[in-house]
Structure formats: C-alpha cells, structure tokens
Image (cartoon, rainbow, N blue to C red; front, side):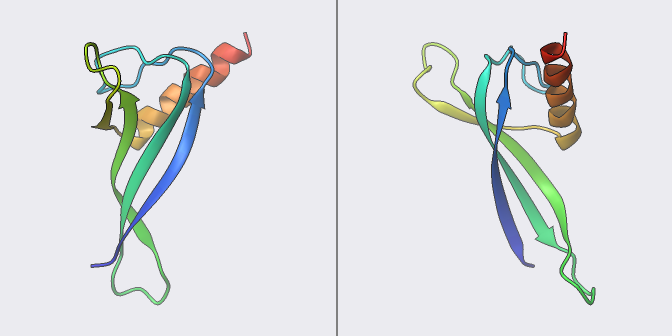
Length: 89
C-alpha cells in the first residue's frame, strides 16, 4: 500500500484547546503531520487520511522536548475555528 505524509504549520493567535490534549496550548505555530494511504483500485490517485498528529512542546520539566500527539482532524479544525472567532471579537 502506498503511503504519504503531509506536513503543515498551523498558527494559533490565542491559547488553544484541542480535544485529546489534556493541557492548554500556548499561542504560536505548530507542525501538523498527516499520514495518508492510497485508495487502491481507482483509475485516479486518491488518498485517505489514516492519522493526524500535532507536535507540541513537552510538559515541565521536559519543556525542551517535543511531543507528537495524535489528534482528530475535526478537533483540529474546531480549534482553528475557535481561534479565528476569538480574533474577530
């Protein structure tokens, strides 16, 4: 099966909460990694998302490390929407 990984940077202008992450994330830029697999048997290339992870700073005393935490793509979109709404207030 063919896999691909996409990387993007998302920026929160305000502290953010994402379902599945037990702590408040400070405002800033975060790398998001999405793994996708090719859907076989189609006459064109098409991929389905199989995992989404966000890179966040480690918790004290490991604040110099980075954690890769799995998240739902909908949960990430919800957090981005809340951040955008907070920016318009």
